[in-house]
Length: 399
Ligand SMILES: Cc1cc2nc3c(=O)[nH]c(=O)nc-3n(C[C@H](O)[C@H](O)[C@H](O)COP(=O)(O)OP(=O)(O)OC[C@H]3O[C@@H](n4cnc5c(N)ncnc54)[C@H](O)[C@@H]3O)c2cc1C
Image (cartoon, rainbow, N blue to C red; front, side, top):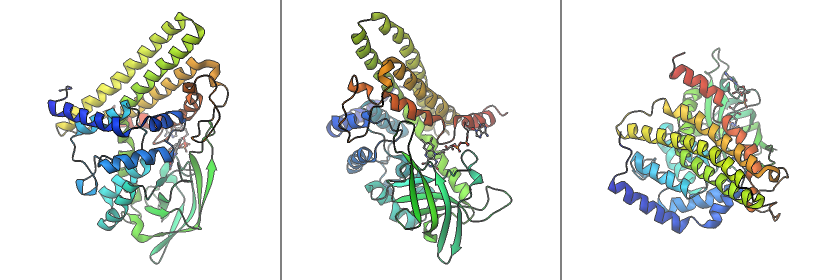
């Protein structure tokens, strides 16, 4: 296992750093930092997306004919960790990280040629319609129904927790096209236009008062059969394929976690200067070191997995374990950040981009409480950590 970068890789790292210095403005960085929402605000994410698309670095893993870079796994790692270190905004995953890779793997040529350029340009902004009021962890219990009428499906039912549905013009959905004995059968994967009379979007606010997700209600909404991915009734296999991409994103999180730990140091510095108390500083030095050890361990596990990738091996069980470890560390970081700012975390601080409200205490305190609240979600979405542990128990421990 070789964890050192080669000369060529170090040159590439410099090239990435030069690009980030030029294109990643402090306004973009500050706007992304200020938000407490789990997903980056659309405006910020799309501005950064447009810059990456212009450079040709938006979708490194995709085939070159669809915008990919043909980088090695190590180059991709260098790129994403440099972006995280420079505190670049996270990109919205539903298009670039989910439906895009799915279309490339399972879509028809017509679907790819039509949708892929629109995902890259941002013309289509996607949301994910999987969960329903009675179907979350047990997703296969979904009931939202689609009936075939000629060359269309007519959809009735509802989806919930649909992130950014209020901002999206497209939704990809799992719908029931047949009631089979086995609930995983009779599910179909459809791409649906959000801008039609049969779709209503009802907001749900998070505990931190952010409008991230929604309930989406379908009343005789329509989708064309040409917008189905895979065969009718075979949507479960399509959904499982997509899940691999949803989980894979965690590999790039290690550097982001380390950046967030650095942010605690900043908070401690501000508070200890106010308190004029050197004990405060030493109390948190220990806690921060423990977080750093956990962050570095995740980072080296990522690098170890990369070393296997480069030798053509599959990532193995590390990715499932890392998802659980990374989200738990993320929550722990937010717990300690809130503990540091203490009563500055108590008043509601508006983190919206357009607010004129000045921050209570230091500007750095503004998103801390909201982040703490919103980040409870990381161990729930994309398959809860309990479900991840079930997978680890079965696939790794064989129990
Ligand atoms: C911020 C956020 C954004 C989201 N965005 C989207 C989105 O865009 N699109 C979408 O479709 N969905 C989205 N979701 C929904 C998410 O996928 C579900 O919340 C998740 O799958 C859990 O389902 P549930 O909420 O119904 O909880 P439940 O499935 O009811 O689970 C409740 C609790 O029971 C535990 N549990 C359930 N089954 C088991 C089991 N077999 N073994 C052990 N423990 C179990 C769970 O871990 C959890 O703690 C989002 C959720 C959040 C929090």
